[in-house]
Length: 204
Image 1 (cartoon, rainbow, N blue to C red):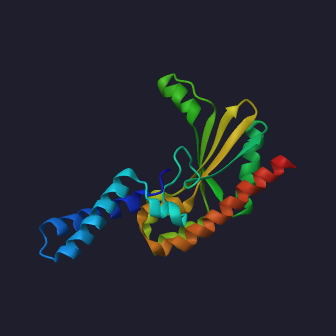
Image 2: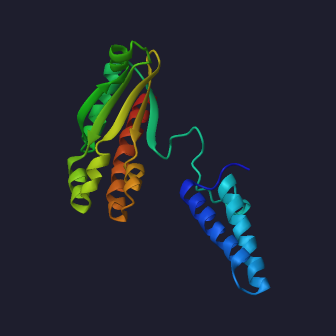
Image 3: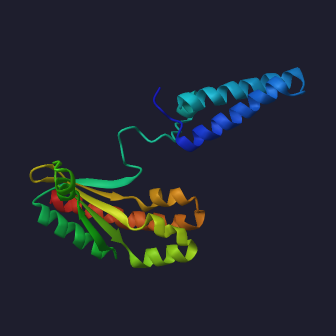
């Protein structure tokens, strides 16, 4: 059975399971109640620790992000062309959705300069939609700690690049502020459109 209990669900299961087991062991409830608490406690601890729950599998629920995948964090596609072509197309698509580029870091050059180490060409762009940023800041100034979003152009092989953009809703989750959810989801949709257009242009 694959992982189907995510981090938050895992914490809840272990916490509630531990509390139930303590109630069963040290509580003064009737025997039948202690038996139920024991079952709940053992089940919660077991499924929380192993991150695998038969009931989740039965109903088709999975809160555990697949290992080795960044789909929940990134919106991504692969495109062909020169770096300049990919950068130009990405910039144009971002502008169409109201996003601008605030920063640029050529990571491969910085690592070569500072460490004399070589990695494939990797450029990190700080991208931001001013309206989304402003509306979010009014709701919660702490949002500035997760701005801007990163858009990465990473060379896979010569002439082939992975384009990966941080999903705003994944960053907003760190703040645990439901008031920001709607704006983040709209930003997700705008960035998904950018990536879809890149992929469609590639296929054309």
